[in-house]
Length: 192
Image (cartoon, rainbow, N blue to C red; front, side, top):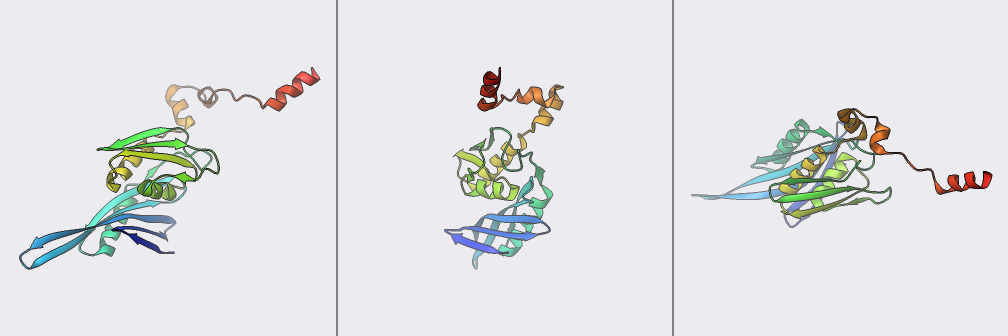
């Protein structure tokens, strides 16, 4: 499955191979002026994920677009991280990340919310397999900084099990007691 959309120098493309989905976030054309004229090179930013909690990003430069994408994809596969997900659809908690002047805020969301995020962050969440998240980027709008800030935030995510083990407590102590539904409390009053 290959899909390609180009708008104003940016490209969105996805491919599936080896159970991994790679999404092309952006392509940048760079010109070097030499004696005989201009030499063009291309820089690609790619996000790769298995849509089950693993994701990575990479950038590659080459004289042709396909070669730049191939280099970026290889680098992304080498730099994959695992992100804990709640119910396989959202984050466990709200988290912030930053890289350079780019700052992002990621918030967990209820089922059915969808991915509410801007371009480069959306590619990361789709590759990761998160279905419900609300994200906001402030500061730099550079795709490289936004993706790196998003990965900084994702590295800070922790599951309740990991937090409980770190503190030497039980998971139920970390999450707190869940209150019974209102109907169950009313039933006890009526029966009592």
